Amino acid sequence: MNVLSRLCAVILAVSFGLVAMGKAHATYPDKPIRLVAPYAAGGLTDILARSLAQELSNRVGQPVIVENRAGAGGIIGTDFVAKAPPDGYTLALLSQGLASVNASLYPNLPYDTQRDFTPISLIAKFSMVLVGNPARTSESANQLIDQARKNPLALTYGSAGNASTAHLTMVMLNDATGTKMLHVPFKGEAPALTELVGGRIDSIFATVGGALPLIQGGKLRAIAVADKTRNSQLPDVPTLRETGVKDFEVFGWYAVLAPAKVPPEVVTRLSKALMAIGKDAQFQKSMIARGIEAVGSTPDEAAKTIRDETARWGAIVRKANITVD
Figure 1 (spheres, rainbow, N blue to C red):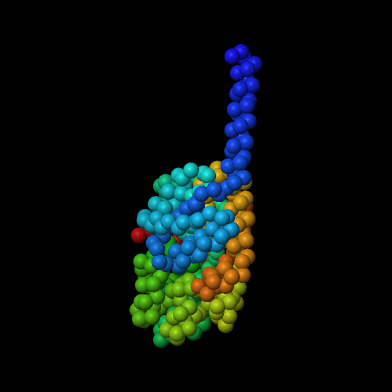
Figure 2: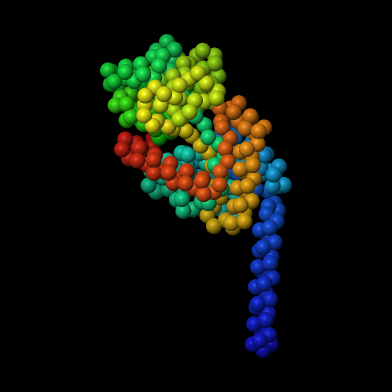
């Protein structure tokens, strides 16, 4: 075979390869997708993951299988996705803790969220509500803040653990109001709420979904919402901004991410599907019932949220010298 023949053969092979790649991307997905949730099965995140998986499956025409990979505070499952093939068949459902806060808590993470992942879409957000025991806590946020100012460290607050959203939100409130309340961490929100109902701590920033049944049952008092607007499930509960805490805004969120270097056409396919899910009235209704607001975003919007939240929580973690258990 002469040089010209060999050159033609190479060009032909490359052309066929490019066509094959284009077809592979155009037909994505052509096999099941794995959605990794780095959390234990059975909780609110797991419910969100399975609801989302079903909706995504309906839109892409392939099964979306939820895989719970808990361990090391979610780091094991997150690292698994970071190192998975960047083909769009392994995705992660991450909360703001794993996607943004952990970068400041763990100096030796085996991955870098902003380097090793491709954000696809924000998918949900949830409000935090300051709740107290009706027999122990003041009726309003202003009364609680005033009491905390007059009696430093006399009031206690619970959380789902060190550096949890509940913990960091109260750190922000202490910083914004010049108060000092004593932190009592628990291993999860449920045991913290149990202790609050029992009157052994004074307050906690809880997820609306987790606290709502206890509020409705009269076992807890809703004092204020941490978000910038009132929550639709608690329309009579003011925001902390309304009570005079300037520019206070905290909300939890979830995003879907893929490994870095996923083909752009795959990102587009997934992003469009996830944005459609976030706008779906039935999905929104089912999420509201659990205290979650369904959302959808572009990849750029998701990436900006992760960057901004990483910087924001990093500053709080460093200022308060917060460490993990």
